[in-house]
Length: 227
Image 1: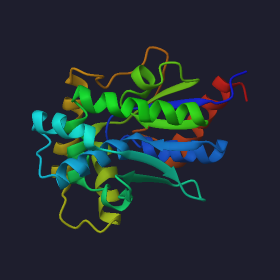
Image 2: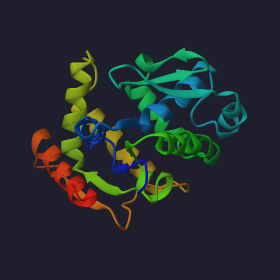
Image 3: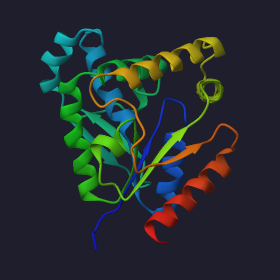
């Protein structure tokens, strides 16, 4: 019997992957791996260096200078350490989400972070969410879920999340446009595009509450793990 279990939750932006992954990880006592935060950390570094996320040459030139560690505190909360500094609090902004989406299309970035993600899964039982976890990062994950929802629903959820963090400037139309643009980039990028793994279970949460979504996912996990 393998020593570690891996659960992959993929899906488009704003589908609720992070919330669901955290709840499942807490219920099972697994580590939650927020891969979006890992990509945002690269984006934050690129921004600090004054490089545009559209500057492929600049990003490729700097990628080898990035040293990233993923650490967990006593409560199991993930912290991102960039070149020795904890930058977790700088990452959850629309700008960093945009940076992450754009730089994730670069093969050099994905190659560096692929090892980081796989090393985490090799060292512990994890629930990992992202765009290509079940298809590329952990193709042999014990459980694969593709979480989705209508773009309008995802925009409403994302806007509420931003407002709860004190964002008073973002509008629904703006957030919806950002989500639809990101969906297009994620689906059409040449490297590891967003798609549902052949053996994943699709869960559409458009008409579900957080509690209903979590219950459905826990049931799928329990069935797949035989618990």
